Length: 224
Image 1 (cartoon, one colour):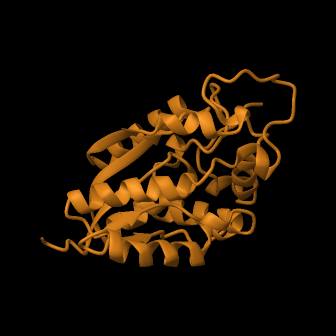
Image 2 (image 1 turned 90 degrees about the vertical axis):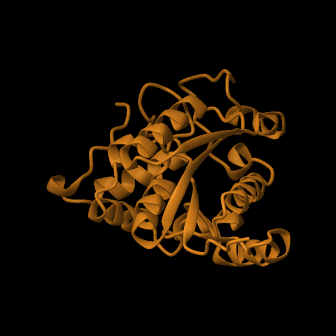
Image 3 (image 1 turned 135 degrees about the vertical axis):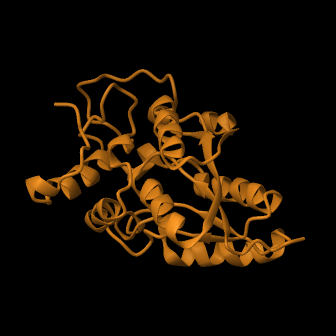
């Protein structure tokens, strides 16, 4: 088997981190596939549209994997089709948004695709800011996953996140530098016409964008 050490499968959610990580990967690796997962998340339609748009922008093959069985294990507020009072606070706590072993499942699926496609790299988007609260964003987590892939894949697939050591403001700045299609990003937990601007994911992104001078702000829009 060819190791394909510089070839990559990009696991893209449509959010800021994974889109910018993909943009950087195009400078660092030979990206062969953009992979998206439907795991029954509330914003699946918006995320899918974002990822298809990004794959089209970069002229890369797109493939979707069906992991919708995770929906039944997820918090009710994170499930596709779940009703919600629009005036209520949206998914404020980790318990509200934590989907059991989601990143573990996604990375293992992506590694299977990478091995099959003779790719040595899975590109994904983690960040320093969210690693404070989410242990599966941390450098230590990625190192442990890579150690397991040394044994579970014949070509030693490894996970690389080009945003791992950055916070949201730095990731936005990198995306601007790389001319990434930031207008396509969908980082909201909800699935409305526009990103809600209120959920924790939106608030982190909005704060990063608002910190930029007006002339440098990317065309990322929120409701209201």
